[in-house]
Length: 134
Image 1 (cartoon, helix red, strand yellow):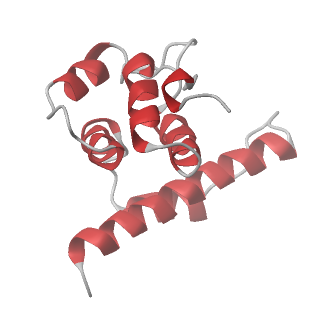
Image 2: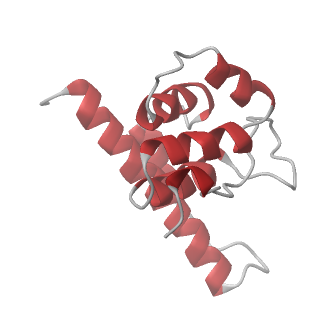
């Protein structure tokens, strides 16, 4: 069995640049990847992976945080700065009015719809956590 200090996660790069460079992930894809490894690896292993994955403005944001910040605190800070700022209603409206583009395959359209729905559900979860009962 390997020592936990030997584990090196290869999380996709993220800088927060717009448009997203070809060698990097969008924030939504980056967040999904981090959420996936958080359930498998210890917090300190994921934090080390984040340190290697973050570039540019996103890395500066993490470096300005407390040294003992948790992965969840880091991701919340990144979400606040680089996440989708559209309202839940706007995201839901985009999802409900989405149409298949000319030349877009059914698979591409399905993936685009899933991404829009994922953004709605994430935003709804954040709003529920922050706003309390309606």
